[in-house]
Image 1 (cartoon, helix red, strand yellow):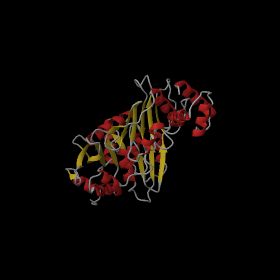
Image 2 (cartoon, helix red, strand yellow; image 1 turned 60 degrees about the vertical axis):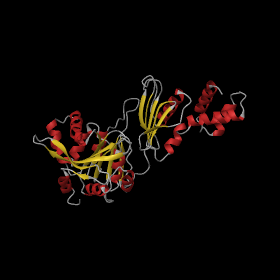
Image 3 (tube, helix red, strand yellow; image 1 turned 120 degrees about the horizontal axis):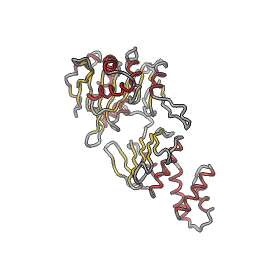
Image 4 (cartoon, helix red, strand yellow; image 1 turned 30 degrees about the vertical axis):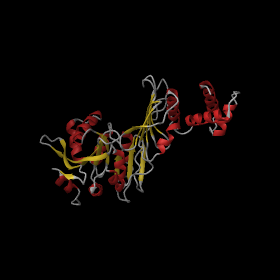
Length: 382
């Protein structure tokens, strides 16, 4: 069973356009005119099916409900995250070429290019899984493939408490913030659980309210009866058809949202979001990458500069628009948890700063200096 034989079968199956069922793969192998035993045909059929259908050898990992990320950095370096940090698996590919072929096929399924002229891709697969891939020579040695699993349902707040993401009793505080229609951002690093927590919080929104989501990649799955989902679009080969997150925010404002949600604030759309939250759209929310809760105002300041907002204008809008920052971290054990809840206030110079109101505690949130301010914002519900 040579590599050349398998390559020829791959070519024939691709040209036929037919579904690569086990019978068709086996028939294509036997049609090569080589003397092959039943064991060789079965082995070759399985190898080719893994490459041509689904996510190949990664399929069992993605089927595991505990897995959030699958990361391939080489044919024998396949990692998963089950919520406790990265673990090296026993899954392997035949060679670096097999990893590249899988990445290119998945890119094609998402209607994207991945070749020497365009050596990376960021896309969403039909089932919702987020895919990113980089091929050599940009990726040294082997294609790097990253798959982030989007589960079909949001976790309930009780499940997040049980998992240790929310401390005991913290669900009462979070529910009060949502019901008080406070505008908030969830901050944290990559993989800290921002989207997971936001989906759960949106499930607490009243059933009579309309939620409009604007996302780069449709990852939010709130358990709510009235959700409108908008997703950005890249330009086509001719450079036409681009739809940005800023475009979506502007369109969302015309769709009568009770809650305007930006999946991740990462660019000039920050100016439209802050403007919306200052014109009667209470309860808006989103996520932002930040190292700490106190870094959120400077982060928004930098994003606002890209939208043409000067520092004073940005802070004036921010002071009136945003009320709370919830910050997530991953501790040394790999557990995702809420580290802090901050409220926003102006300093002596009129610029917005965050003030700790609650800090993580194993037995429940620990109150800090901004607690009374948070309690006042929640209308005395805390």
